[in-house]
Image 1 (cartoon, one colour):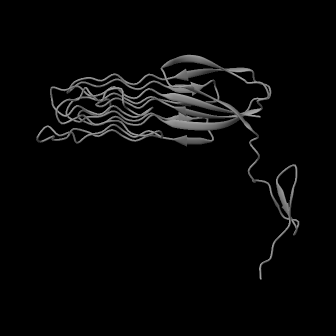
Image 2 (image 1 turned 60 degrees about the horizontal axis):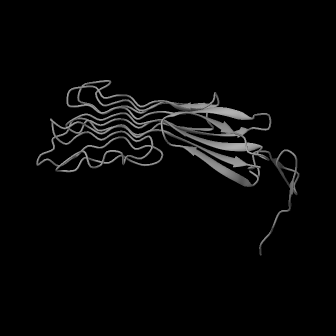
Image 3 (image 1 turned 90 degrees about the vertical axis):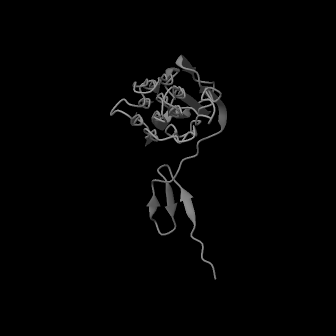
Length: 222
């Protein structure tokens, strides 16, 4: 025999037939109106669509650059936030650039910070060798979001043996970077997931990859 409890939606949550109330019940997001996304480094403006009252924002910081001998960049941080935009008309959007690559021994460039106005931001991952020589870059830091996640750490110095890559950039919320090929490390440039760290080159004379640029995505709801 099954027993069902009647529930009633109230202004503050869900009320059960035994008079208890759950005030943390999820709210109706309304209808999805449109989606905006910015995946190239730069500064942009989000304009509120007609009928929009709330938005869900995803912000991914850029990845750090890689060096030679598998020393790879760290991934950028990730944050997301639900925002009431009833009284908001426009917000500045910033997308961080991926950290520049470099050769063996050098410190690669850090990834840039991505942000959605002053609501939430995610710093970029650090380049390889930024903290200690021959190590992978650390992740960036998120702030302001309802969800705040750090990314993966890049690999450090590795023995590639027969020219086979063993290193990889730190994974971001959106995916991973590409490892260098066993014969060349240039063909996979530009194929890194948003915010992922650049992979280190497989050989001493090979430079690593650039870090993946950040990305900002906005879901507009009625």
